[in-house]
Image (cartoon, rainbow, N blue to C red):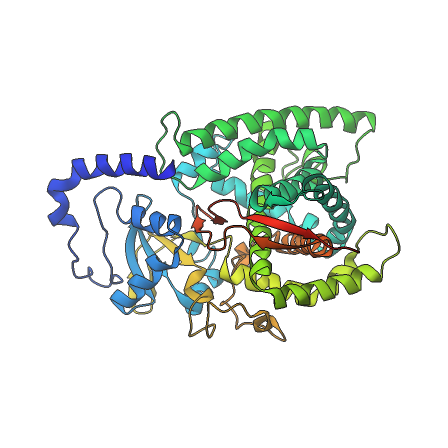
Length: 479
């Protein structure tokens, strides 16, 4: 369906701009001091190629083709309606991550503001996200995370009992989305009832699918569906917020039970409290960030463990030793998580080969020089995880699955970046580690499995997902 809308847009753009093609599309020498590259078609630039390489399952192709063409680790292009430079490699990552809020700042396409409209007329979704990041450290620091492990274990047990046990075959990706979304609902807003979680599930899927899509707001397009889904979810969240206010007032809810209570009871530096719509906006963003990327990672753990029996066996051995050390009915705890060293190395190798965060945009705050080239103020800058993750100069034999890459001190700085880096490193990195490891524990303790579609295609839209959802055949353990 996505490709259908892209085709419509492409036909329109080609019809309008064909007469201008030879004026704009030919490769031209770079303007004085600019990185080498080209701007592509009028209006759309190289956006269609940038997006379509992901839909075809090879998002790195856009990057590496241009690195080879221009013999440069930085090149110019035109993406999502903006003049842009792409920074590649560990040096590019280091430069951007080290200069956050100095030379560059985070940037999202204007279409994101339509999907995540700020309830504050004076601020954009970007500014609201900055405020949100200031709130999060208290909830993702080690002492807080330690409290989450038992809750995650409890939810994971219910998830596998409800959705996996007793089935001969399952489709994995919808289930990993359900698992991570259930956790996010429970830990962020204390919604645990499966029926209530399910009510949110489909709108969130539509929102995620349309977030980074062609911004055509016509009925039936992914972008239009995302806007409608966002509006629906915000209304539902406002209802939850209103009820929580009542529960806090009569003492049936705790001030420290989740992020929602904290937001309701915490004022800013001027003594003002957030409005209900402000809180709904922020919870919406948290629920997206708190489950979508981890669901992709969990699905690819299933994929690679199915393909690599010796890796599965190593994870199974480690998790069995942990399970055997527990009393009957005892939940996992923080100490158990710290013992899952091999399992986390495996998860990191999954994140290297299939990073949920493919890259991100920055905006130049002023003119600056990089590698001898001028990056003008206002230009957008994109960094790509794949420019290091599957670069043979960084990771030898990069397509080989090798968890030992993460033993000892692990990869060199700025080469393994599934969670970004610098001040904008994902604040939920440790939270994601917990939910992935708890998932792996219950998965391998219950089953072996095999892929039903051995050569299933992977698409990236905007994160990697198996095209058919990764159907597998389950073989429960006898013990």
